Length: 116
Image (cartoon, rainbow, N blue to C red; front, side, top):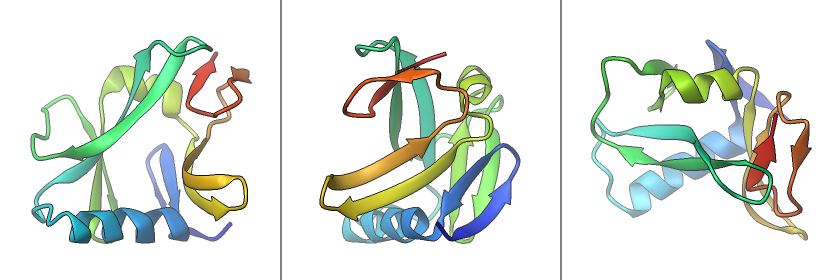
């Protein structure tokens, strides 16, 4: 997995960064919007990942720069996401973003929820 850049506590692979930029361009998301990644309670393993574009950077957000993308993460989510690598898979097992989270000690089969 080729890593583009690591800033602060989360990293993006080259594939993930390219896919985020592609989605942003295809949906005509304004340049000032960042990618918000968060963790919410729920899912079969206790916590779920959420991500989407957000134009409202909060004062309490950690902001990480990856080339043309800003990543916004709130403090509570950052606690669970420290050390995580965001990747993108387009292989035989499906297409989508993959969170390689060293803090997760259990996860569901679909990879969308985890427990610590």
